[in-house]
Image 1 (tube, rainbow, N blue to C red):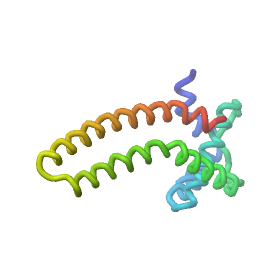
Image 2: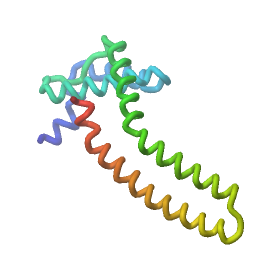
Image 3: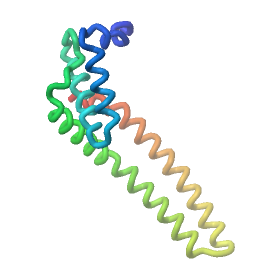
Amino acid sequence: MDVGKSLRFVFDDKDWISKLLVGLLVSIVPILNFAFLGYTVRLMRNVREGILYPLPDWSDIGDYFVKGLILVVVIIIYMIPIIILSLILGGAGVVTDMTASGDLADVAGGLIAGAGVLLTCLITIYVLVFTFYFYAMVIH
């Protein structure tokens, strides 16, 4: 692996300034920034295919937008377990806080705190595994 090439490949393209400026503008605009995600998918695939100048041009922004939108939907689908665990934990905390009083509240609060630590560990492991496979999923 050539680390130097991975850092300078952007500057090898003769139109790198215009491509990066368009990318900057697209990434700043809400909703249109999905196109920037699609652009990065195309860039990663170009690198995988060994294209000499992998930095793509912005001529197909509609395709980039669709690919970026699909990527966001896939990420949300993969994050559903985390969303559900967070909602369960938050809901349990709210219900316990509203209904319990006295010693029962202390016990319930301790159980909720312990469950929170456990769920936080599970969520961290899930996110680490997802992050590890994310780029392979995007390139595929």
